Image (tube, rainbow, N blue to C red; front, side, top):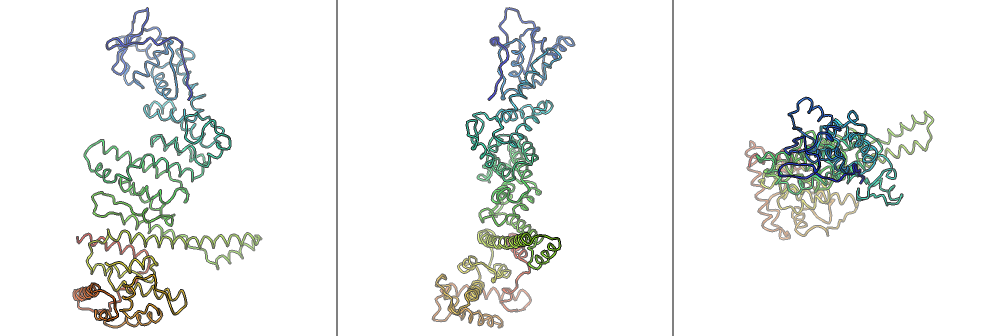
Length: 594
């Protein structure tokens, strides 16, 4: 790091009782008080370089206090030693304090040519701001003197210097040996050039407070030369440095917000400001940050009770790349740590709504529309190769959109499996059956079918219907009359056999089961389980009996109507979005009942 030495005389300041004095043959003739400390000094060396002290002595000789002195006694002694010609050392760590103190004492060219203000400005502009680490340290120290630093344009000059170095090639940047963990002066030119793609500057500027960091990142982004992916990496580094404890100590953070302590409330407010500032800096490009990072920010937003606009912005960004998420990413804690729910389902529903809206606003291009576009382009004398290339691009885009929807569908399947224990752990059997009415068993994935087949809390009718559709789907996929059932448990095979669904002949099973659905009794009586070939336990038979009893009670409450029991399974909602919304509404109703 760069430093500057001024003066040649030795330091002769000493403390006598509660006074600070200078060892000299001439007796002290000037007493001055700074930040509670009293100094016995000499008028001549001080007044010859400090215009403010000259005016104090001429206007009010009895006044000897310097209120609100920037930098306190350390900065004052630095300026006083300069006046005495004693040796002082200026570096990035104290140049801001020295500059503010010199400005306060008015040590300008008006009093003496080449005064302290002039020398500090030259050192700042020619040395400090040319170094990477010096610029960051200087900017960091400005937070102790925010008003003075703004008035003297120190803050803005440091930010401009840092941004210009990020935007320039690393080989053009003066880097000190202690500045960074990734790039040094002794690195080869090839290593320094390769550092651009790694965002060598991200860890260093992460040391700044959020206000200075935000202004620095705005200056870097406005340059337009740094890729959005590097901006995203820098934000990830900063968030991991300042927001790690929020992810691990959720209950402690919640308790702090409920506390009456002003200091704890201030900490939560600072964290909330930091989070919302990071959100405002997110690049607009889709792939700038990962979906996992966005969901981590959303979890922190819930814990810190961030503004609804910030949460909505994160939900919209997550929806743009939802296919990249995992089930664990979507397990977002609720807003209040006192909530009985383990996860916030509403925010995930908002993400899915945004995903569906985005899918509707940008539909895939059809081949017919592509052919029409080809004809129009031929009329414009466009080459055939370009036309074919654009058509292939549109088809790839359409395929990618369809693929992302499939990934999101599987993601929702896994998410529902994960949260089912929390969202519906206290539901009774009739409420479970009402939930199952919105399921479209034809559209369940293989993983969801296997989970449903082994879920003891699902109504047995749903299990049988799931297995029936899975058998029919397998038969249609293979176009054969025989489907292997080696992957199904033995009790599930017995369940299919008990309801006249032959595992070895799913086509016949489809016909027999479809016709059986239309009967008034629906052939779902417990007597079907009394076949000697059935391997179902007495527990399953009793569960079916309980289901029938609940059905009769439910029908009697509904006015004595007895519709077909399989109408519940055939009632499929019109849009996937409705399925999840009904799922949530039932969840809320169950909570209200409890």
